[in-house]
Length: 84
Image 1 (cartoon, rainbow, N blue to C red):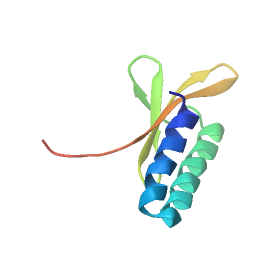
Image 2 (cartoon, rainbow, N blue to C red; image 1 turned 90 degrees about the horizontal axis):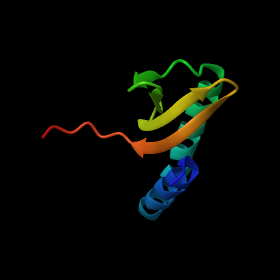
Image 3 (cartoon, rainbow, N blue to C red; image 1 turned 180 degrees about the vertical axis):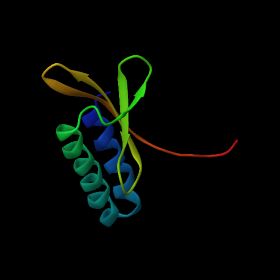
């Protein structure tokens, strides 16, 4: 599954619950992607090369790799901080 497919699945899920929130979630993720374009090394390092950032408002994880001339988005995931 690609990052775009992840975002489409997220949008589809939330659209069924509340269509108004879907646009805000997508805008939140897109805002984070724009920031990532300007500051690709700003994300937290996970493992050897994988990095991640959290979208500001809705806290979606955006996982990515930094390549010499580009940023490769691996996936977009819902962050849930639950206690066991």
